[in-house]
Image (cartoon, rainbow, N blue to C red; front, side, top):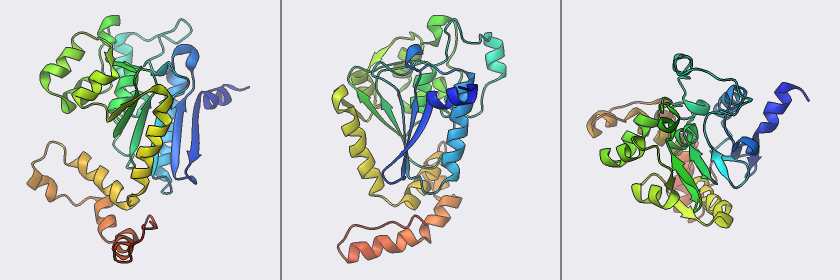
Length: 269
């Protein structure tokens, strides 16, 4: 098996729901789904492919097995080691796994957290829109415990999401936090027993797919572009996906379906 084939086996992208949903799986359970350079490159390829495919309406990202979503950067003995300065100098503008700071993936992204989401793994979770966690999952920006810093958006993404004291309580201890505590902080949408994780993710996907894909693309662009603006400033934004959505076939179909008392069939254009 070639190196490229091995990496593709370790990061799988599977289509579901008649090709409308992409499930991206980091399949490296021997290192708790930690991410090395080759894995990052493959993830970057996948995100670019999904962005270019307008038939995709949602993405689920997860890790293989039941122990870990991802434990972040691969620091195992066989991994290529970088110094802190080397890592900092080579930071990906799209963040950890080319996802945590990504601003161009305009479809809903659901994190299916099946175990540890630590370091860069938690940063990837912070780059998602909806987070569903198994009750045994643990989260943490644990970099300070190994002399590192959450440089791929962890500090700033967390500060955006929760009050200062809660964010600093995580950042300044590097502790591993149970899923239930993350739910109380507002960082997780739902916590379920591990055996019901897929059922919960499917339920959320059903709700997402009931919506117009044009509307959801517009909402994601608006939410991202409006961050830091006043509501009045954000209201004045004229974004590509917004302009498409307000004059789309989806908009016409939504009205027709409502009037005809039937579920809409979204053209996605």
